[in-house]
Image (cartoon, rainbow, N blue to C red; front, side, top):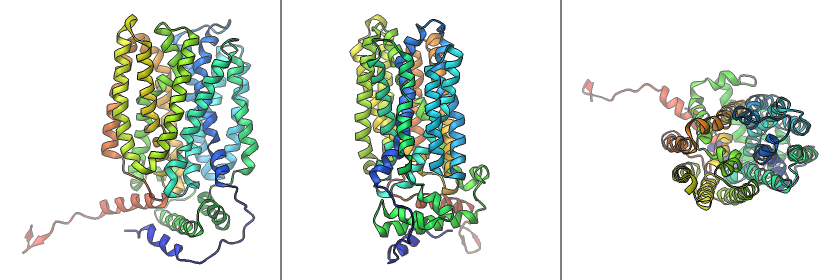
Length: 490
């Protein structure tokens, strides 16, 4: 059985070694975390702005509406994100996190402008798919980068900044929809996504490479300097020692750069892979995204004017941002697993409430439906919203973290594609009430999955989490020998 990482970390902590001279000058931690999470704003904006633009697109000559076209316009982002997530993760493992973030920024700019100049549905769907490459890349890379930069004691809060940026971007998309609703200029709505992408590229020179990637690629002095800029020196030395030890241990299991696919199939990684597959699917099965993407059209289908529906989305977006800010303070206090379980229970009740209101037809209370959606947003934003990204960013071994996160995000976007494309079809075929009951079942499954498969990672370093995978595997490999007394089985 491997020795615990903590022993090496404690030994390093007693060292008086000073950081070796390095040309790297780490920026302030706040700068690192802001620009590191900025991709989340783009992610949220591009997935949210379509909600208010959809009605205006469908009224434009040359853009005939249908349930299938609506699903493709909304789901196009998810279709591209499937490939973006998988590709970005593998490239980040090979070339580093920072160069891939630069490419993602460029794709955001080109994709946003392509959406703004679309002459018809075909072009617009293609541009949304292309834009999805960047959204998928952001979803896989930002949580990994933030997790690798953050100290263990605050990793939940700092890595969760990704979700705060996502919901902030979502609210900005809703606000843009409302601001331009008077003109109905959906082209400007979609094209304005290029602005934060320009900010991301401009700020990239302030963003250092991941210290864990640097150690893995033989650039230990640079990594030590960067870590010393974001945490006390003794903690930085412990982290360096732990990263080196777990890297050496992984090498002993036959892993290495470029071996991501084989390593993902390794038995010792299997518990992390189960979580990395289950959590993304169940996150989409909560039904949160049918509210995120389709809130205006849901309200309109229930008889509200479009302008009022947009005002309601602003309320929902604001509720979500405030809730995530509160949730980030709870991740490192209450733990990941507790928040998963509590969130699933609350979302089950809120989705059932929404289904009840939808079943009332003309007697539905718009205020009650808004309240139910708000409870859904609060529940998700305090729990699954930030926690799922934090957990996915910390459960995988270092050598395959980018590729594994890419796999998890690919699965997440496949699930998102199924939900976003399928919702208009499900609503037309089953009715809104039965569709929402379907998602009630999803939240029940989410509760059961987290109850039996998710382990708590609060307060543990990434290296300790990885060593726990090794330890559990080694325990299972040991033969189960029954005790023997007096020559017979006890």
